[in-house]
Length: 573
Image (cartoon, rainbow, N blue to C red; front, side, top):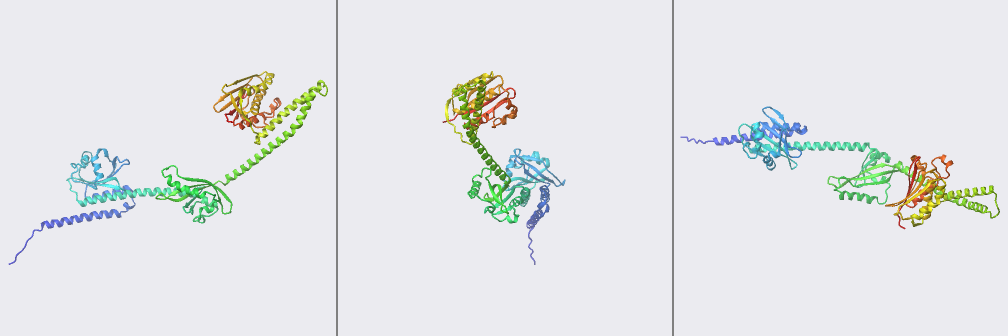
């Protein structure tokens, strides 16, 4: 007799079938992920094509009606749909946006959970806010959302949207959704990396173009002072090929000066101390001669700045070298010319001073003898003789005044004039000068007026020189005023005292102002026949004024009159 044992293996069979199904699902998911990883589109394609491939693969693997991919906008106030794949229609769309302020619970859930597996999306508190405006419109009943994280920041979400009956999401499906989000994260990182690399490549190309084509020498020097690179302009400037310069010490081609090493050290120190000054990078600018291959000196303006490394430490010196040899040669020629001109001026002044002294001695004898004859001490004279003697004496006076002016001018130009500064009563100075020229003004029928500011009481000046300056200005005003009046106005100003001599004379063309204060110059040669003078008065007056720390200025209108202003500053004795 045989005994048969019968067992119910239905449950065991179901378990095995379930495990087989789960294994198939896992295999399918892994295949999808492997295919995505190997995809040329994922590796090399543009971002929009990569996202479309990911949403299609996810929809086909999870058997959902729709997969959408959303990214935060720039200010983080909303998420925008970058791609939505509809399986039934087999189309990709984009453009919709969801405001963070309108769905606060859902956005907070995105930030807090690794994945959002919602079986009943209409009633689940995490997604209930979306039911009216989004879920019901599209017939979505279940959601499996996976946040997208890039570099520790939330940038978006991948939404797997199931339509029809409520769906229970498995752990395997949640893991797969997370893997899909990771693939999106990789794609975004790759795009950002490509953008950065492209920008870097473009920047490097631009720098290289500037480096190679610049007419100014550019050198890259390491912290040991060895040349890493040199552009063609620098090679031409020094007479070497690039390969001959690279690896050599930068300072070997310079003519260094004492203290240069300290300047470079200070530049490096400033890199660390001025890290907050973004707009003002530490920089060293000096003028130094470089030595050309042929031994000649090349004068340059050298600008050195420090290029920091990835961690902020100094890595290279960037040297910008501008050839200023021509400018330096011009400066040297100008200095030589200036020195020669100054030497010539001193020689001229010394010659004039010597000649003036030599002329003054016999002239004094002539004038002294003329006075004796005028006084008829040695005998009486007839009328014709008196006329000749008077002419001789007046000519001698004129010549003596001219010699005195030449002597004064030469002393000032030679730097030998010394002022005796004293506090002077302005009223007394003005009255003395006015009394000297009053007869001359009356003889021409001119009114001589004056106005003195009561506050202009004391003036610090050399008494003889201030009278000489005012006398020159008043004499000129009377000389060149055929009719009308001459005015002397004195006023106190915050910095000193102004003496203004104005007239109603012939006036001066503004184009002639530059010649006014040059010695031995008169503005119109025709005036020489009508008005006597050598043109020394104004030149001497301005030099004496500037010797006092002041100046003489002029305003004039042709045919109306002129106004000369002598300014003397307040001084301490």
